[in-house]
Amino acid sequence: MTVADTGEAGPWTPVPGGVEWRRGRYAVSTDPARLDVPSTTAFLATTEWAAGIAEPLVRRSIEGALAFGVYDGDAQVGFARVVSDRATFAWVGDVFIVDSHRGLGLGLWLMRCVVAHPDLQELRRWALTSSGARGLYARLGFMPLGAPETFMEIHDPGVHRRQRAREG
Image (cartoon, rainbow, N blue to C red):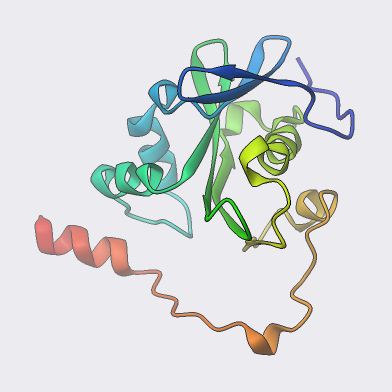
């Protein structure tokens, strides 16, 4: 079942621990109790941006953020995480849809739900990094940095592997 893009997330309803959007058999929910943290970790650990990440760190990242799960019935098939003060700024990260559910419109719908979340309205800046889905994010209004010379970073992509090696 493909999720047609209507140009908006659609109506949300309150659920225990968060809010939820529904389209047919699919749901996007911010209820942390629904998240399948082991499968989220397994997926993230294979990505370029979070290679080797351990489950305790994923759990901690979810606790410090607003986490969105995408569900096909009860099975989690996608994820996104937003770190925000819920007043002025939000950073979107760890966005994915599992391979078996790609091409169905779920990624775009997930991101429409992220930017429509009631606690994230009236932010003056959203940020994310992406190496492969720029077209999807552009449809939501994300653009390359207007003044990249004003942004700075410390980037350490090997930190998770080094930490696991120390622990293991």
